[in-house]
Image (cartoon, rainbow, N blue to C red; front, side, top):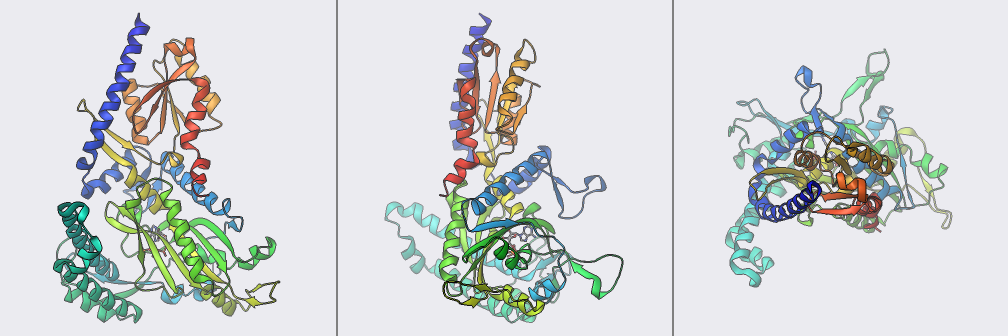
Length: 544
Ligand code: ATP
């Protein structure tokens, strides 16, 4: 009798949860206020073991964070997705792991000693420091957002008959804003290209840009600030011993170009991928893990024949946006943005921007770096860094297309998409992390309904069967509803519940995170059901 009762209750609860889900789905959009979303993500990350402020017991260190037990798993999964997409899905891409410290001449050759600067400006009243180019970019973004709003309004008004292109070309408000955007962009580009710091200051003043936090317009002059951290090697002080913490991982790839090409008998076109830490003494390091001074990059340099750069640049733009979109985090959340000012090494460059809580911002850069880096390393090292083409007998310094994505920004993009607050039909609330299942830190939670009557032992058996395949969590504490909520908050795609019936019929209840749908299945099928959803190979399969 007790068994029958529990079954009815379970069935009913499952139904309730599905209805609640539908209700919650409609409430979701309204509930989320993007202004405080970043704050909510930060506190969720701390509460649930994703990200902690670094050295917190000493009150933390500005813009420095530690990844916790779930955060490091998520990071590893993102890395795996990127690494395999690069090295397994492309026969002609291999990976390396170069040292963080490099010979100091590397950074002279790469241009970082002379040109890795940001234009900084201080507000005299608030004493806050900003990047002058970022203040201007934010100004442009505000105008773009105004235009998007106008378009949205008109779209709603005219419905199917709406022609966006025509509207943008004729609406006076949109045209006025667009003209302003063009003027600001061209003045900013000219000033940045000429390193005209006075011009940048003038532009900020002409546009009456104020300190975003205090509204003050009392600015200092604009100054250049080099972003590299330097330190000393060994015990000898002085210039000769000054070395830098690498500000990008790319140079470790360039200096190893010939080592890899020769030892791997690589033929052009080929790529070298690397994941590793990079360090930049950022002028402003705010917005959580979006901009840090110590961060991790996933970079790939693709070596090509000069003259094929346009073609390969487009190839990598497509390949990279497809990599992002395969995760299912909303195609509307990505945008390409062409660089206004090209870096000293590039002849074409764009960013893939993601819709972060602070708006669309750079997530990844794709750069056509010409032969700048290899050419300069040749000059500075005196060593030939050329590729000899056996078929044609030609010898040349290869051109390079680079794809460069910040692992921490990818982490933040994932959480931005995933973090969802829902009000269920019964009025209760749940926070769920809808992390793409292949990236989720824990794939399955195994939950004995009660912590007695042989249920924990049965649950442990299941853990033993599955632990070789998935990262699992066993949890027998608290009421089942609370345990579900805990797993939702961590982003676990599946919960498996073991009840008294399991001991007789060898079946468990499997609950899916996003729909909260529950199904009774045989234990033998659990692995296959979970695998179909969480497998990295299934995700990678979308790219081939
Ligand atoms: P930004 O304009 O935001 O400073 P960037 O153009 O200097 O970025 P790149 O040099 O192209 O960045 O670096 C490649 C990627 O590394 C960026 O797309 C970003 O994801 C990541 N990245 C760069 N700087 C940081 C940082 N300070 N903290 C976290 N990630 C970073």
